[in-house]
Length: 457
Ligand code: GAP
Image (cartoon, rainbow, N blue to C red; front, side, top):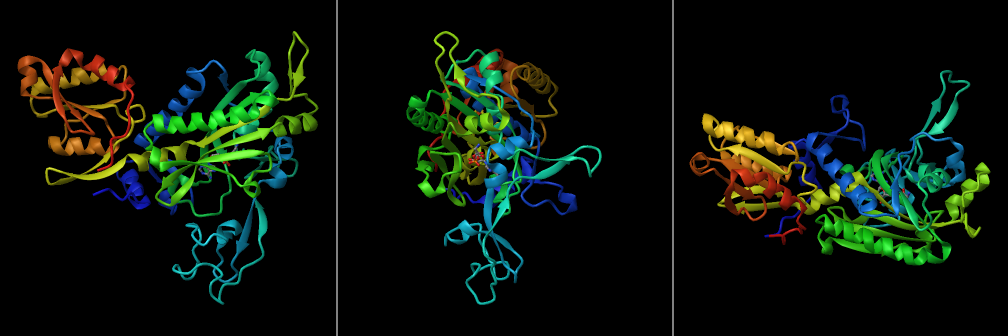
């Protein structure tokens, strides 16, 4: 029987094992905001590390950047966000709920439920009293300066991309890069989203992994297609099943104000097919806008030939939290083993928060504990590992299964006799014995092997 993976099951596992919980919960929570516990932080860090590796470490043509969250407010005027980064909203005067007009138009949309009668859709009954759509800017505004009256209005960035565009000249010169080249950035972004969150799918603050790839204008189409394929392959490389991914090119009326072509990589989330990552051909929109508004020419000039052009930009943009959600959903499985149910996260070993557990079979056995502690101390120098001696061995395995730990090393009586340990594999449940002194190199070898998700049961 195939596991039906619902959002409730993911939320419950995340809470039970301390991956993610509602923000400021003791005060009743804060809508669409979540805090990340120990395993959530480790998993999120691994997602970011794998993205940065693929973007920067494995390539010669992309460099990293970390720009400020609060930028000169003129950046957001030039980028079009002050004027155009808005959702059309409809209020219901009866139930006081707010809806996105474009979601209301879609009869299947998950985000739309009548505030009074959950089974009904807004506008369906004569009680519903909906306003005309009004544009609502998604940027959070705050003030910089000690004195309220003389302070300056600024925005929390709604995307990391603009910090890259305004640094184009700095980076191109300092990093001595010639188009095609890219600038990659990971960091927080903030949006005053009004639609209910669906857990960490859509939140008020989130992290983005964005890369702006600057290319000669004549090569833009080719690079756009390249990056759609490259990004799709990244999700598969880290374990997402191909059948749960699809590429959906945007219709002309869906395109953002800056884009001449966008494709979403969609994932089959429990809420249905939804955007996981966007890849946009932004043309020369951003560099041209910032050149006009700032007076600084953002263009490429070849010092030898004198050739000059405004590069076009291809942008793959992925949310860290949304990516983590997709990995969790894809990895989640319930199965019955030996008449007992187990929940397992079949995460790619390079994403798993903990790579291996070290377990002495009997916690009161001094010789086993000593060997287990010493193995643990050795392994933790190079990997995220856990030592656990509490409770029955079966329960300890299940705890590790639920947080996605790919391997467990158990120290038992035989270890004290012949110096071998049992390795248990999370996915196949196979057990083999290997010499204690080989464990560190065995784990290092397994961690770099290619991995793909086993078929769902
Ligand atoms: N610079 C382009 C840009 O920001 P976007 O499609 O608005 O494009 C890119 O955002 C990605 O950021 C999305 O595909 C999604 O993964 C993530 N994202 C956007 N809004 C989000 C939110 N409110 N909560 C969580 N992730 C979000």
